[in-house]
Length: 122
Image (tube, rainbow, N blue to C red):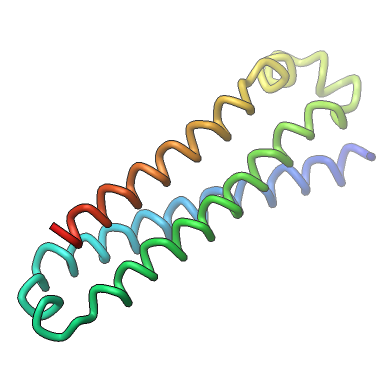
């Protein structure tokens, strides 16, 4: 892979990751607000299932999107050209624990979804 293609790919996947983290954060906070402040309405209307589905579906979307972006960033280590790989940033990038980032992504998203579902049904 040539250096310009590598740079653009890394930039795009990092932007994908930033975008989904922001979207997931806003949507999760919104769902939490619905659960906390709309409890009476949710109980009266029976809309809990719809909120639960949204919690689960946005979690799956974020998990798949983030995991793919992190996996691609990690794969970028093998595609660095010699100049980038020899730089301090390149050496640091090569040492980044992308497997741990993927596991942490899973734990955080599952943790948020489970706690929201517990709050929804308690």
